[in-house]
Length: 227
Image 1 (cartoon, rainbow, N blue to C red):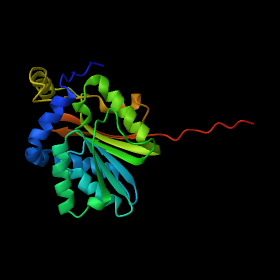
Image 2 (image 1 turned 45 degrees about the vertical axis):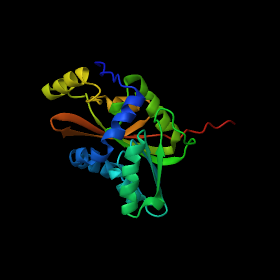
Image 3 (image 1 turned 180 degrees about the vertical axis):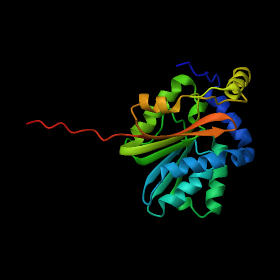
Image 4 (image 1 turned 30 degrees about the horizontal axis):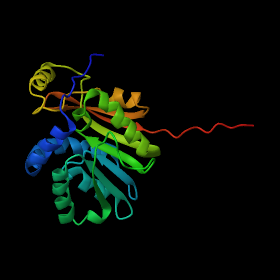
């Protein structure tokens, strides 16, 4: 398996970038949202569930998660950028959904949530923003905060299929990582290596880039009987 590209961008620089573009980021969403909708369909969040979105950004998916979990559920959005969270808060307040939502500013490599807090977790176009050594750390944190039997659905740009568009994208990323800060990763393999049981994977085309929507399960520990 060929190594994925590194992301030589500090957390502070990334935070500053997303703070700066927060008011305009929904323009990017016009492109991303159709793929996020596919991931939400696969996630199938239910009434009463407590769901964590890692990298919630301006709250487009979080709004829909809040609708799906209902009054008895909770949608928690985690993001590194306080300005992105401000946009998300405005969106959710206008939709009348803030009572169902908690917004948390924080780093996904060291979440401040207790163990086994969430029924499900969700991320889109986020995991590929982290530098290569940080990806297993993020996945370990997500697994930690999930309840046994909890599921994690991730949508990422994938390196499973490499064509001319992927090579061109990586070439640009190598030279301008501050502006093209994400890159294709091996999402399914990363989840499996982090201890998730893969229950489904959907390959999609994202402007001729390969994408993966992967659902992984945190299996319940088997009890050992001592007689």
